[in-house]
Length: 272
Image (tube, rainbow, N blue to C red):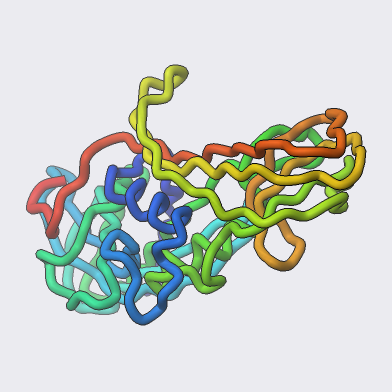
């Protein structure tokens, strides 16, 4: 018998997940053969019982992007087709650098979640656990600053493969009109790691400040300042909302952060 549970990773990210996102944004995960040590492939899921005791670890998920409502998410599907029998409640997603072996000491806890009220697996059951990871996305109907849907492919690359499948997630600035059609494009090179505490939530964060001084050739009424790659698609947007941009020298700045909710463990923890 197949049993399936879907878990959305909400308000459950660790410092190690934030480190991985920061490394991705810094462009440290662009070398597929030798990514930075903080670039982590999420390929292990530790399972815990109702009392928070460790049961087992599942490896090698199937990884895809899925559309949930209007949100694009990365889904990691872990399958347990063993004859094991257990009652499970908590799960922890772990990641490792692709150059490291699949051994506990090389894994870092990325996210922890609970499977609703729990699930029971009998020896005849095949258990499928769908872990979905997303991010707040730009909404053209109610526009505000944020990540754009194409960022899911950079996230898919790091979580599924351990490196950014598109080399670097950001290397272009684009000023756009109200329909997000580019008005002018500039190189984006300046990146600085940042950290701090969000005054609104009280949560710590790791992130990257993107900043470049550019020369704008025209005069525009601009609605979006987009961070992008070589092609037009959009990864992150600062919503200008119809700001007049004159020709001349301007400094573009955008800060992207990943908040985290707790400090994770290195190696599979014996307790949830």
